[in-house]
Length: 296
Ligand SMILES: Nc1ncnc2c1ncn2[C@@H]1O[C@H](COP(=O)(O)OP(=O)(O)OP(=O)(O)O)[C@@H](O)[C@H]1O
Ligand SMILES: [Mg+2]
Image (cartoon, rainbow, N blue to C red; front, top):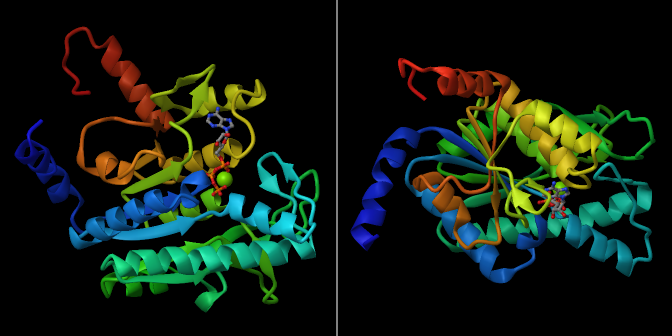
C-alpha cells in the first residue's frame, strides 16, 4: 500500500474510536527491550492525541524475577501467579514502581503527558487477599477501582499508567496479576477495547496461533495443559472483561514494533480475538445462514 492508502485506512477507525476508552496491558519481555518500549510510548501518545482515552496497565514479571534473584529470594509460580511472601513483596514493589516511572517518563518524553500510579494512590485499586487452594501470600484481587480519578486524569489529557499493586482495607499492599488489573479497569471504565501486548503472537496451540478463542475452548486448553503459566490468568481475565461488556478484547504480539497502532487502525486481524459466547453463537448463526440474511 502507498503511504496515503495506509493513512486513509485509519480514518474510519479514528471516527469510530474518538472519545472512547481503551485499556492497554503492557507486559512480557517487550517491556525490557528499549526499541519496543519507545515504540509503545509513541503509539500510546498517538492514540491519545487522536482523541482516544488511554489507560496503560503494566506488568513486570521479568524485572521482578531479576530483582528477587539479586536478593536471593526464591521465585515460585502457582498457575501463573507469583507466590508473594513479605520479601517477595518488597521485590515486587521495587520492580513495579521503577518500571511504572520509566513507562510514564517515556510516554511523557514523547509528548503524551502520562502519570504513573499504583493502586495505593487515592485508593485507585482497592484489593483483598486472593483466596486460592494453595496460599499465595500477599497476592490480591481487585475489589474496586477509583473510576473518578481515572476519568479526572483522562479528561485533563493525561494517560494514567497503572502498576498492579492493590491496597487492602487496613492499608496493606498486595501484588496483583497485571492482566487482572487491566481487565478490572476496563470493566470499571466500560472500555471499548482491552488490548494485551505480550511477548508472544497470541494464544498458541501446537505451535499455531489461534485467531480467536471462546470460553469453552479456553477451558479445555487449560485442562489439557496447552494453555499454561502466565497465559492462564491472561485468558481468565480476558473472559471476565468480555463477559462484563468490554466490547473488544484482543491479545497481540508486542514484539512487533507499533503493533498497538496496527491493531487499532488497520484491519490486519493480528493476534487472538477473545470472543464472548454471544459472539460465538452469532458467528455460528452466520455460518449456518444459507439465505445470507444476517450480516456477519
Ligand atoms: N498456549 C499458550 N499460548 C501462548 N503463550 C503461552 C501459552 N501457554 C503459556 N504461555 C506463556 O505465557 C507467556 C505470557 O505470559 P507472561 O505472564 O509471561 O507475560 P505477560 O503477562 O505479558 O507479562 P507480565 O506477567 O510481566 O505482565 C508467554 O510468553 C508463554 O510463555
Ligand atoms: Mg503475566
